[in-house]
Structure formats: structure tokens, C-alpha cells
Image (tube, rainbow, N blue to C red; front, side, top):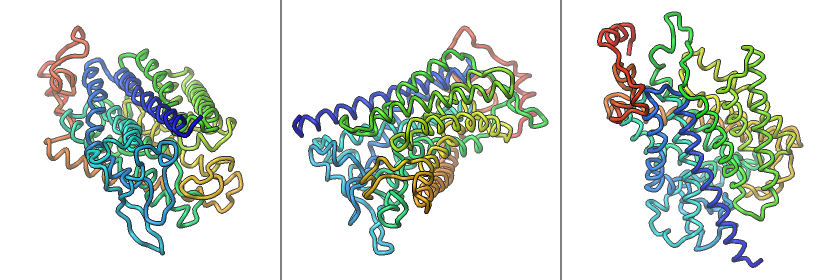
Length: 478
């Protein structure tokens, strides 16, 4: 096979993987809508649809430039991305513009600044494929808060905030991890293993989305009726569990685009292992979450089965290329338990997350990053982030523990960035649209008709009496 043939096949492979990730949007839409009540079905589904073009437009305008504008090289730093190798067609070295700072004798990458509106990159195949692949990853992050904030998030606020995620919030941390930025450089310049490593998005995609969901849920407050006068949480059941189960299976299918696709090359000898690790982690996490709920409450909760499966997929995403199948199974099993326990714990602490997004994406994302620092077995990763030798965790020879420290630092930075910037942006959007949350009347009657002008299930539409709305308002402090 010639070099041109190999490059063409790799390009097709990355695009196919990106198409799989894009198809995950359908899975998210089904899960979130099914977990919500019928009166909010159209609103929740519409957010899942519109977040895709909104996030893409923001990423097209400036997010891609900020994240990947300097992805190939930053000063004396070795290439931070594999895009330079398997997809080097059309002059991939165009993505070399990075804001940097000189410190301790090295040039640290802060933020890319080339590729706004893809200007000048229209004939650069590598850059265009890089944009598309990174865009669908970003859009998953932007989607995560739609489930956590469902049933009370004003549609105007949602549209503006989703644009900001694609344009700014996601891109900065994404640059530091995947765009040649300073977290990736910790290995080359500070001797911390291979720097912060996240193969397929446990932190870049999921921990970012989970943290955004956390701060937004806290600022929005719980749904009306979620907590009694004593503060004890009450169950608010979704309207369509088969929809949730179907959406989960769609996400499990699309997830192979996340993990196996992140090899960026068909010729990678790691694709088979990554696919198996992904599947095993999801199986172990599903079983662990099911058994946890069965033991605790006497029956297996289908919604927790789904959250367990997704938590395992989130957790294995960072380490899928660096661990053995048995370790992937262990990572998934731990994820299943902590996700199920996390959903219950967060609910008891006043965080009303209808779909469990904070636990699935946030808690499991933290575990996934830590798991890499603990279990990377030193058989893969030579040259990753410009560091010689393979990626090695604490239990397999990195006794310093340098790699684990880099992972912990990335976790802290990711959470802090999204809490402060994401929370600040959410508050500013709320001021601009005069409130992030819908009124009491709208929330009680359902968001579909007041916010969208159409009901998801017209035959189920019902109205509350003015007296009931008034009495509810008198008992709620907004």
C-alpha cells in the first residue's frame, strides 16, 4: 500500500468515526426525553437537536481556532497531536499559531489563534477533518447540560449558552490537553510522565460537560416538587423507559467512534484492543450498577442500568489504549458502582439532575483520568505528547508517581475552569435573557407549548388551575 493510499484510508476512518459520534446525538435525545415527563418532551428533544448546530457554529467561528490553531507545534515543543502523521495531506502544518508564554526556559502553549471561520483552510484536508472530528466531540460536551437542566431551562438561555460552549468554554481546556497546550507539555517540560493524557475524552469531553452540568444545576435549583418540606428528595419518574434503554444502546454503539476512532489511523495495532476494552468496561459497569441497586433496594433499576453502562464508557475513554482487557473490566466495574452511588448522593444533597449527567459524566470522568495514572501498563504511547517511552501508571512501574500527578492536575484544572468560567457565563446569560429558568406557570404546565408553541404529546396536554398555580407559587421561593 502506498503512502497516499494509507493516508486516504486513515482520512476515511476518522470521518466514519466522527459520523458515529455525531449519531450519538440521537441516543442523548432519546435518553433525556425519556427520563423527563411527557409535558416537556418536545422541549427536551428540541434542545438535543438545536445544540448540534449551535455548538458547531460557535466552534466554526472561533472554538476550533482557539483549540487547534497551534496543534502541530508550539515553539520548541514536539507535535502534540497525531493529526500531523496519519492525516498529513494539504499542508497540516498550517495549524501552528499559538499564544505562548515563556517560563522556566520553555515555551508553554496557552491558546491557538489560527482557523477562525476556517479561513485559509478550505483546501487543507487534514485541518478540515480535524475540525469535523473535534467538532462532534465538542458537541457531546455541549449536550450534557441539556439533560441535567431539563424541565426548567429557558430555551433562550439554552441557545446562547450552547453557542458559548462551542466558541469558548470547551475550546480552552481542549487546547491545553489536545491542542499542544501546557497540560500536554507537562511531560516534556516538567518531567511528569507524558503530561496530562486523555486518549478519547474522559476529561476533555465528559468531565467538562459534567462540571458544567453541576454548576448549572446548582444555579438553577431543583424542579418544583422534587424536595419535600423536610428536604427529602421525591422521585419524579420519566415518561418513557423504553426510549431511555434504546438511547443507551445507541450511545454504546456510537462510543466506538469515540474510542477506536481516536487512533486516527486504521493501521494502528491498537484498534482491536481499544474496541474490546470499550465493550468490556461497559459490560462490567452495567452489571456492577445493576447489582448495586438490586442489593440496596431489592430490584434492578433500568435507569441506573443505563447510567452504569454510560459511566463505564466515560471512565474507559481516557485509558482505553493503555490498559489490558482485565484492567478495563475493573475500571468499568468501579465506574458502575460510583456512578450509581453518585446519583443517589447528589440527589440527597439538593442537586436535581433528571438524567444523572453529573455522576455519569463528571464522577466517572474523574475516575477515568485517575485510572490511567494508576493502570497504564507501559505497552503503548511512545512519542505521545512528544515524550519517549510508553505511558506508564503507578501500578505498572511509574513509582514517582509522575503520570498520576499530571492526571490529577488536569482534573483540578478542568473542574476549576468549567466551574468558574461556565458558571460565570451562565449567570451573565441569565441577566441578558432575564432569567435562566422558566416561570412557575410554565414549569407546572410543561415547557413544550409556552417555549416552543407545540406539544410533544398533544393528547396528554392538560392545564393546571389558576388556584393550584397560585398556591404552588406561594410555597416556592425563587
